[in-house]
Image 1: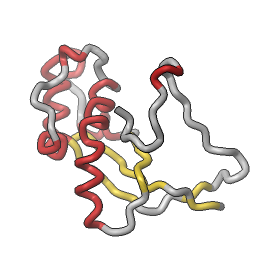
Image 2 (image 1 turned 90 degrees about the vertical axis):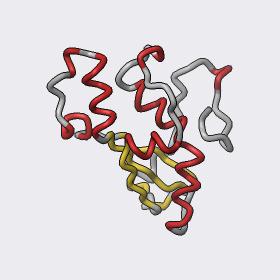
Image 3 (image 1 turned 180 degrees about the horizontal axis):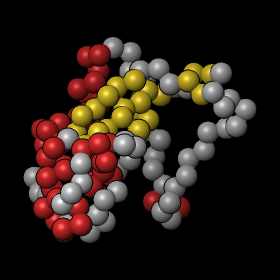
Length: 129
């Protein structure tokens, strides 16, 4: 087993996100919080060593993660809420930080899969946008 040079956040939608989902699609009217959090998204982030780095990480990735979470439900950006910022991100999502990430499949190399064209490759030093 090997430790990787990343930390991890798990992002779980809260009530405002659920309210938004319910407001834009009649089929989502009966969605329950446990349904949207059953398989919450995990994001690898730069390594963090102390809890005081958490606010910096949220400031760094909030816009990108917010958009990813919205896109996972609705790809039509016209339906997305306006005024998205770090404050709104914190209101809409619970964020769990995990500073240590172990790779229990050490004999298979980690790979980055880019679902967009190669022209849109993400720079390793960027936060994805």
